[in-house]
Image 1 (cartoon, one colour):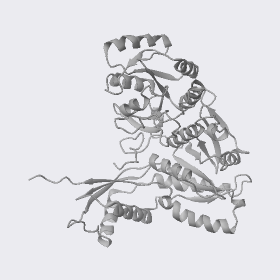
Image 2 (cartoon, rainbow, N blue to C red):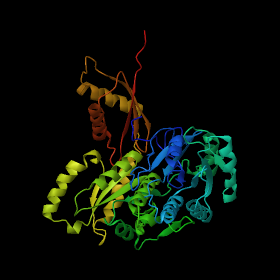
Image 3 (cartoon, helix red, strand yellow):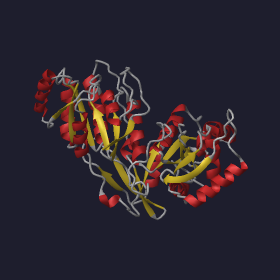
Image 4 (tube, rainbow, N blue to C red):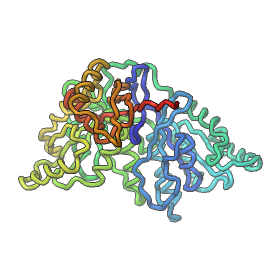
Length: 456
């Protein structure tokens, strides 16, 4: 599987997505081994293991699978480990993560025991009423194991003794995590007509709240608040264009997190978790400002998560002829990777053209769920190869033997080939797939299965 494209979340036998997978937040002080433990859970070295003060990490959620069940791990590492007010910062950060998650893995260093900071987090965990799995890390021998049993006093249940470094005890801990996470509800399978899930994302001050308020006004708004902490995700059900839509984690939009330290980290944590929970993301960009590095990072997060995408250029009333000219050039240059995303120009403050959002969302979701039959796909691949064969590389010319669409949401194709195809040729296949079948508003995942060379 190409990197950056996680396996589709929960899928049934046909590869159809069954909705969002449960989320596990990993919380604890710096240097208790959270990231090493996250790597152990996801089975690959992906989390940042060095705790560099002040590093704002872009990617904080990872796909994990244990005993055939998929879940998302949110690693909450990146606050600034500054001695002043550390307990408050960690408490605030843990509060956000706990609010977003279905269950929590609380990691403590068994060799150190419980510190004041840990005690502050325990208070929040108790108040949250969420299921908590307690991991006593760095238990490398019998003596430390005996000390770890003192952690029963926290009142969080059995401490699971693990060594993130050596993998000791991680199986029992993972079993406990699965028990703490909710089973995907059976009624979601084949659910028809459940509200589609939308995340409104974008950097601060681009008008996300104005857009949400504009959509919600004069509509019957049901606030679906998950009970617990003050910063829980709040989803709003809003009726637009004759149907109900679920807007994900609107608390994160309405109330920007303004902690003195690391608020960018919290914002990026919320954004990536909202994207993971959504089916389609609406990226709001200020039309009057240049497309920024942060905008491109959010686009990358949406593509990595395999979600449908609509781009809304807001504050259009402030965009004059000259800015329009430069914006066109920026779109050609900066958004070349997502030319397939529907774009709309709106002024959220006044409501101008906000009604264009629903048709764009419908188009993007239809593209995201497009399935083409194996017969159609192979007839198309045959024509494509005849018109434009793969270039010869060092005397060899890889051929496409057969193709199949393995999943929708996002459309995922597996190509069986006689050798590895160039990236340029992969891009050509993707471009032609879009020309032929649409796939508006969705990333396309292409996986190659080159034929193994037979050993004589």
